[in-house]
Image (tube, protein in one colour):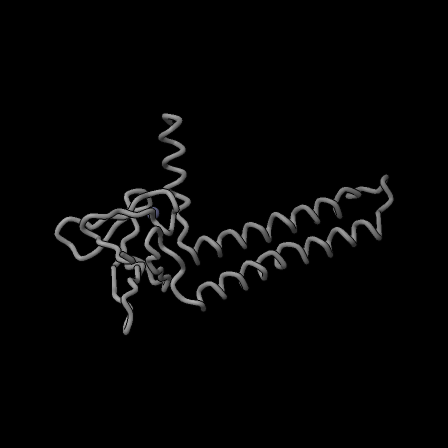
Length: 158
Ligand SMILES: [Zn+2]
């Protein structure tokens, strides 16, 4: 019952949450029809649980089959991703808060040249850190931004 049969079942891809993963013809691996990631199916040692492992990247992401969907496989993965999200939010918020606070506490004379600079700096701080955070997140989760971009372009016939 709690068994994923790669031959007769497809399931939602745990990476892009959009495509379906199914067995590739004549191969022992599975592939997603949307983000093109390749996975291998394994049995967990001393357990009946099945593990889906990402096979086409150096990423160590794994998922376990719950009967309906793939769930993050190990506690470490869940723990690190929660911890990293919290850290990521701080990485964006703290420097922005410092820059904004400085702009607020020491407002420049509105007539001086570059009076706009502290506010601009606060916004730039926010954007810069957000970009860093997003690119780390993308590398870590292998989130298929390009596949989504292709699909958006297709739907608009670009
Ligand atoms: Zn996918």
